[in-house]
Image (cartoon, rainbow, N blue to C red; front, top):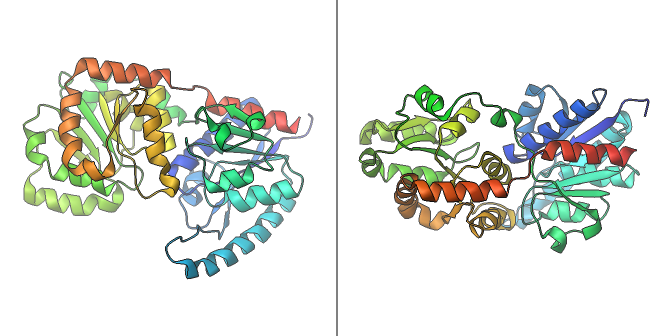
Length: 368
């Protein structure tokens, strides 16, 4: 092919969709440096900041998700969907992509649907073990479906499926620090175990409440904890800690800038069960306790977490049980070297490396 490859990548809404999308874009540029990439996201969502920060152009659609509790509100949702389809058609006509890639999220629906109707080959990436409604609909016209879990034939045509895993942030795999150095950088003692608590980009109320209700136990535990509260909860938690007294072995932050170093320091990670988080934990071989969010479509985080816990690659704690059970269980597990080793090995065995490159190769094949 002489002319530059032109690719639209659509989706977003959360870091779990955005990071894989940016990783795929990076892999395309490595394989084909002449590739021209345009992102299409949802207006007022996270991708409108994160994608330009990564060096890519993005167009926004007014698309929004359906409100299953308040059906009348969906009149405006349908209007936004129709407007988004018209805008997507104009974007595609102007950009003239050779292929369109969907990574999940509101914008991928109208963008890939319109692209397929215009005769442009499409590839979708399903990150979860339970397929979302949008991807199930898009699968009918997609040429290729890249998945992260086995057994996805129950959602998609088997002949279209390729098991690739989920792309992760490359920086996480490139940490130069040793475990001891990473712990010292946090201001902790490398002799004692370290627990990393992350509740996603916005934080997780249940996980945060579990920590707040076990401050005395944490202070007496001889376990060191890095706690990312999420920006949404940070100020209120700071206020509560000023009244309750924060133990010295608990380091509190709203956001972790160097996630690679935090992962390197951690012996055990407490996390929600988003697809990207799970892929990162498996690739890094991290022992984890997964607390699925109950506020996601089709309860897919529970299914993600079970896919690991059923194979001994993580410990499962439900959101309902987390306030009482999570911190006592985490502290006990962090001190059990054999348990940590077994979970870590099983997680590593489930890892699928080079996902971004494999998906990028499939994108190029669709054009050729």
